[in-house]
Length: 144
Image 1 (cartoon, rainbow, N blue to C red):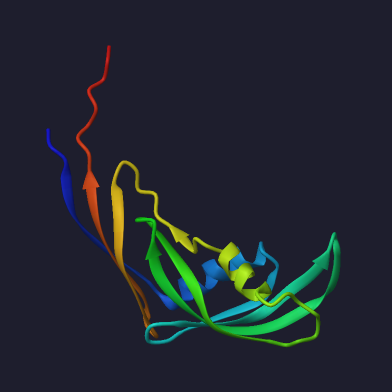
Image 2 (image 1 turned 90 degrees about the vertical axis):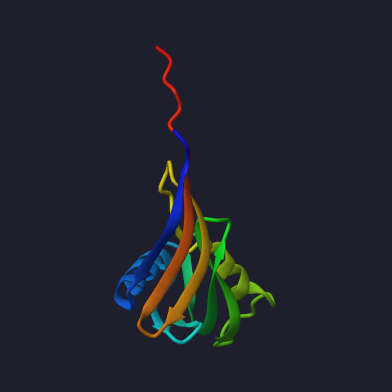
């Protein structure tokens, strides 16, 4: 039997992306995350918890514009394009950028045994469209 290949497309509505990212970001210390999709980008707002050990020193309001893009074949990452931070705390210059990087990959698609190669991530106010090619390797003969 030979390998199969084809094209997959998908769509993520804004409400689903908002719920997913808010839950994911909360694990990284972001509270009140709001996502607004634009043509080609996503606007993100929230408050990052600043902690030392288990002590919360404060919450840092931020807003950012990010670009979503395919990475590593089966992942969607985001890249910070612009950010505004309320300077209530002395922070290293790339503090927010590093925090955003720590949230990558935003999405990972593991459809094993399909091998995905994500080509397009298109952001519009109506949602995120995805386009990928896939291959399905032939089954391995079982040894009895």
